[in-house]
Image (cartoon, rainbow, N blue to C red):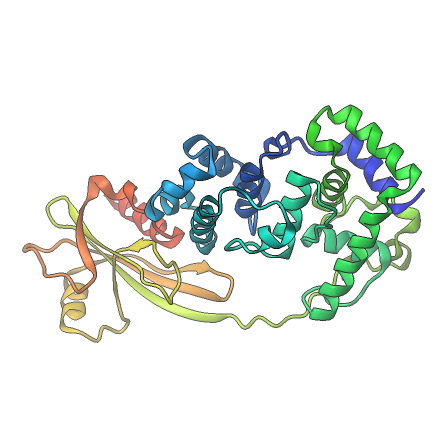
Length: 360
């Protein structure tokens, strides 16, 4: 039995039921793909459902403000995804509808090769193979490929292999397996061969051939899996370590004066662009205001660790309740504390708010 046929038969019995698989609406599918970048399905699904309820069409999303989109996105992290999503929605509306070619889809802000292939395959049945982390892992293990997946050579190699496997769906055996899956799935989406196979391979990697503790004893590909035969499951796939993680220290002061606090919108060119945070002072303080603030403030938490992709943040949280209304630095403005929920903040600032609520 071929690799593709085995994957399809496994999917027939074990495929996940997900709401964005029950439609061919490119907007709903695109939204799910953007949300699920760097995000687990169980975490991302409620966000997809909320976005679909609030903005059921790409036109309604395009009409929203960036602040509204960022606030709805709060908690998912990687906020550039939300900004790109909003920009791409405007692109789609401006060009009169969702693009139907891989080139057109890839031209959308925030869409790369994987996302374009996924949307093209799932929404329009385009014969494009998807290659995400799950697919890399399955192919690397099954075929015993040690080429690093994050190198140019590796990306080309795995993309070509995935595409060749997709094209093998034209075989009579694979077509028969697809027909059986279609009958079981009972969804028009699953009549798209490339869509069905891509989802099968992704699900197999996500739920069976997992990074840790893969289900090798019950694996239908065990007999042909090179990594299993050679005892290299834990070694594959190979990823070249190139990321240099830097540390950054932040000092935040929550100013509380007569039911108001101070916020600013973070500028471009730094982390958390477009999100809001309270007064940030350098540590040690280098201005008269910062010295005055910290002299009268109360330390809430110290060295709170927060990990981002390229850096590790350590933050100190302070509470300052001045007796007179202070003059705020440029860029900061007063906000009623009752309205804080209207502003999208990074997870680190949510931790500050939680520390403040615990103290109060």
